Amino acid sequence: MMERTFVMLKPDAVERGLVGAVLARLEAKGLRLVAAKTMLIDRRLAEEHYQLHKGKPFFEDLVQFICSGMVLVSVWEGRNAIRAVRQLVGATDPTAAAPGTIRGDFGLEITRNIVHASDSQEASAREIRLFFGDLTR
Image (cartoon, rainbow, N blue to C red; front, side, top):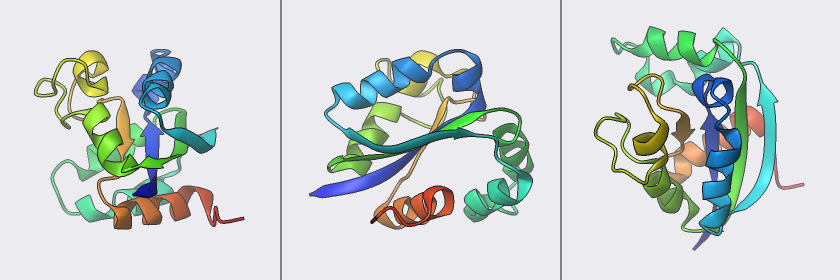
């Protein structure tokens, strides 16, 4: 099934110069880049993005980290794009992520784990809308 998914390269990916390497893996998988932009995320947007984690002990660390530097937000399209990207990204904890995955190869710790990727069609639609508005034009 053709679908779209949201991917954010976090401040650590940008700071470490890993943007090209990560985007190349997504393209090599056969996904098509639909939209991308670099930005600084403010606290309001960060809290809205991570709303499902509000009240959890790590929420504040997530928000502070995502606001700490430039990110690249993007939308990718392809067959089963959400599942394909999640497989490429790997487990949230880079120490548990398989070698060959983005987090397994580049991640340092749970918060600074290089990339965020939507985990469902609902999350993808919400995150794309949050960062890009209506992409149907």
